[in-house]
Image 1 (cartoon, rainbow, N blue to C red):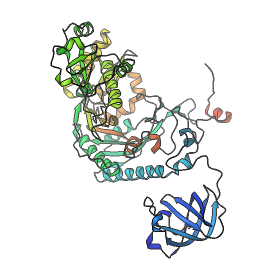
Image 2 (image 1 turned 120 degrees about the vertical axis):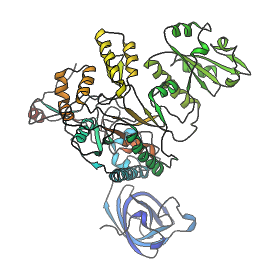
Image 3 (image 1 turned 45 degrees about the vertical axis):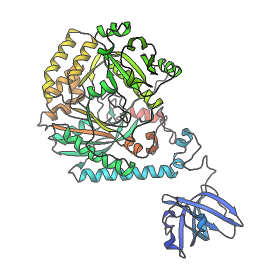
Image 4 (image 1 turned 90 degrees about the vertical axis):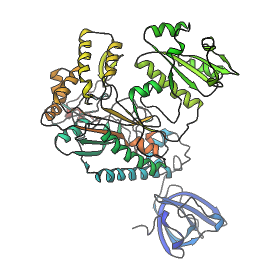
Length: 580
């Protein structure tokens, strides 16, 4: 071995001993004929001292030194280092590998752009914060494996090369050389496999699974990502899954984020959070919520409100505990449509002032009230976007953490852009038994060609056994109790527009498995990258993925995607056509 100790484990107990350490040179300075060098490895920093000749080394060099451990002067202690009270007096050193001039220094206050950090990713990963990110990721992975194994779950690996099936995003496809003209797909999730594993009798499965989705990217989305995937047999009540998972999540966030959280987490239905917050993933670190002001403002003479209420719209009000300036309100009006008033010294101002002057305004003193009128899913989504905007701009969080479950989602929804019915979650979610007859009404409405809004209203009434875990306004995980009856599954697939031939081609292996005695089952998938990022206080999951892609899907370090040779294309029977 090139070392007897790591840089992070050299301490006062070794004073007077001769040791060998190795690491990267991260700092150098000369003082009074001495050369002080800071070596760093994964375990920490250590100061080594050259008393005679100046060493022929530079930043980034990999160096091995031998010498004697001694105490540093007390006024030079580094309390932020594990080895900060000692140093090594060097009597011999060896350059294990030199380094070219570094494009940036691997320090936590790195000044390099994100593009440079991704292009020189190994150097970026050498930074102490990044090293800690991945140490924590390892610990969380290990904890998950032990936690679930102790509860009789088996870790099973499902295929990476699989069949292309519609799951809401585009598949990455892989040409099959041995089957010319045919393709594998990389799995968007192990969804179908884990259901089949329940039919196979494994009872409790989990996997820290790599997933692949060809979709537009952003800070919390990557084309390849990792999720904790699990499934349980003989589950009909969502609470069986929720209780298991919230115990796991609470312990993770207590240990690695210092969160003061105890299960059970609050449960909200989808309709509750949409009515109060306009979002199915509300950030409840802020208590402001929408109130129904339909009866309060309808019939007061405001044409916008009255005309919309006559057509079935609702009036929703958000009371912001801040008196905004007219300039701030005007800037909000550039992105949102609303009516408003605020109260100062008991007098209202704003375009709703004359419609509220006869009411008790005492509760709104020093506050700004925003009023919206409308109906349907797009209306509520706009409410959620507005609440997220004003809380982030004008309020401070009232608590550090907010954990909650959102459940009882509509099973189906109307896609207004494409004019068709689609699953709100995925089409393998089980409806509540008492809502199955309502599916017939949707089938008839589609046959009769009714308006999208009417079909959407019907769809909102059919609730699925779906549940989402939300932390600080971010959906961390999503799951459901599945459809385990093959006939019901086929019926739902037809409802979203698939023919019997398409069902057999795409999902025949699942349907046939369900017909062989499928137990009731349910599970969940949790975004592991997002969990680690939250625990580490990182805004982007790119900070906890070793070699992430850019928002255009480019791997800057490896230079992927890249061209392949004509010989490879010929062997696969493919031809590249460029241009429009």
